[in-house]
Length: 411
Figure 1 (cartoon, rainbow, N blue to C red):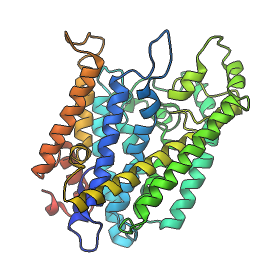
Figure 2: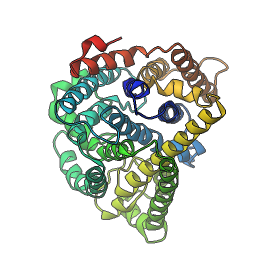
Figure 3: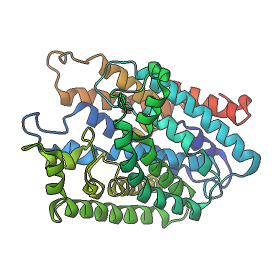
Figure 4: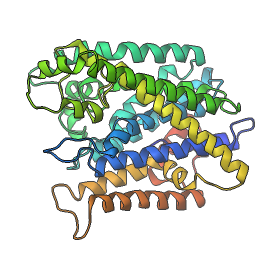
């Protein structure tokens, strides 16, 4: 859901990263899009009566959206100097460009928020994340690493302390629906939901953009860097998930949380594997020991951001392989990944058309997902082969160029 200006500038600037690396970033973004579509259209539990996690829930829940956010940070780093961040007037212009692009994304998100759809739309939160990360764009690698580590460690604790206070207000400072234009009339409630009480809490999710900035500030043209990302991300992801599972299952965490919930028979074990959204994480510090998807705890942030880093490393390596064999192996995914804002928005709009309605005769959930995924891949390939920007990507790119003071560069 980011524009292609970062990739375009890097492809045309002397001394910048090779096309294959940027293709790898776009391909990873395409995978994130297809993963989010899967969690939207395919069941993450077997049934309402039997909440056994499906492989879709176990694989993509929490990870696909996190991959989007980490890639957003990486894209911002690539468009603001790569391993040498911009400074002075150039940095100020870049910040203005990012801010205007964020406003475009927010406008799209608020418009989609008015649709009746059973999806948690990420775009408004995504736009606010862009605005929140602006102060960090001029930082070098060591400072970014420190900020990312600190944010992952401390933001969940502060959120745990603040969230009950916000929810105790009358009415609670929580929307219970996707942000829309109407919610601008209650800014306090809207901000509380976007930052702390909603589905994608920006306060903790800023961690993902900081991790992405770290990745983008690395010297990605070095041969070993993608291998380090793949290996290091895998190790950290496995360690974080293992620690969270041990805390819940071996050290008494789940038993303590079941007492807090006081809902006999509630399948907390299944929910901890797939999605903790909707459960009030209060009354016990054990909530912070979970690595459950969408819990936004330290272990969840660490696990999902590490998975994203490993995926980025893998796709950078696949990009190099494609370059070596002179075959565009990543085209299906990178096409979709180059215009995710448009494709995601169309996907949400189409899904809203079936809200509370039966699927067309002969259609199944699997067929519906295949139609969405195949359409995204085909449309993305056509646009990238014709060297077109997606419609919403073009608007975002234009806003970015205006912010940077170069409207003549819009095309």
